[in-house]
Length: 343
Image 1: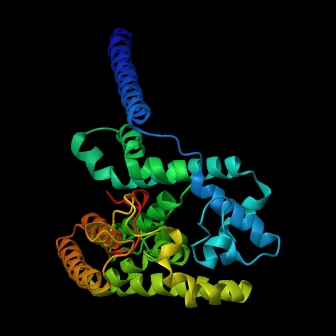
Image 2: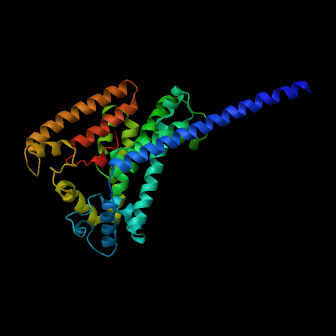
Image 3: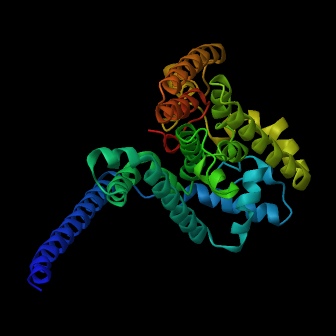
């Protein structure tokens, strides 16, 4: 009896300490969210789903029998610029209002970013001795407050969703390297825990928006053949299926629209933070000097992929993926600030 009574205060004190720690963690999270919100209110601006209005209008136009790539948003010179597979994914939004579609995209994007942060921050949480949920909850408002995230959500863009698809493959490669040779568990469990899906995310992202194809090149250069073949096969399969569903649109995109980068605006616009944008502004021209742009882009491409390969050789797949993502943004003819989620 005395022994039982003597343990109760210790247990009670432990519960109190645990309660105080959780309260402190929740308070810290609230403070970080408040600071991030104040920063956005002070330095951000209003967006009103500008790009989503273009996507929504294009889908309504296409569903009504119009040519997808002939659509021009009212009051602008802008039309739909994504591959037809992206259009098929967006087509259900015709049953929604632009605002509803924009908010659904925002919620999905924030959820995708949160899941990726949970996966990426595990080493940080372990080193700091913090709970993973606490670490991710602190990081999420800071990640959302930076300009690429704000503009992605505000414009109704898909960059955070593409980022999540690409980084999911990075997580898969990390799991595969950590659990090489393990064959425990059922087939489905091995598929999930062993990172067998590596390449599917990059393949889907490439079919939605072409620039992630550079990750396939990176996977091939670093001889991660299984992931490279999976990514290429996924992108090719999805694209071929899209050809069977939307043949005329697919032909138009890959023969004409893909090469007309000026459809999204002139290269010298200040928000275009690519190499082409810098050169166009330096030369006071709507377009970058072709030969100079190709020369510098080739040099940057070689350096970026080389450094990514070195990071992979050192076992730092996260740094490698970051370098590839940033390199793709730099060498792209048009790279708006909301594309730079890899920062």
